[in-house]
Image (tube, rainbow, N blue to C red):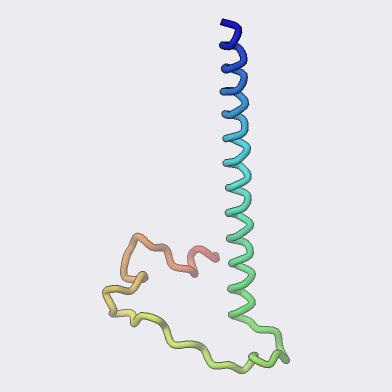
Length: 84
């Protein structure tokens, strides 16, 4: 019976660690989205005078009428909506 309080303490500690881990994962995910936003804004408006500043835009991977296009599926939010 002496073991039961120790086990309960370990279980409580595990629950606290789980909550802390979830918070850290959420923070990391938010930071990654912020980095993605910054990277996308840099691609859309390159620094003037940069060697690739006059490059032409790339062709889209899918056409708008292509049924395989992720944009054709309502399950996937557009990148523009995620960045705004």
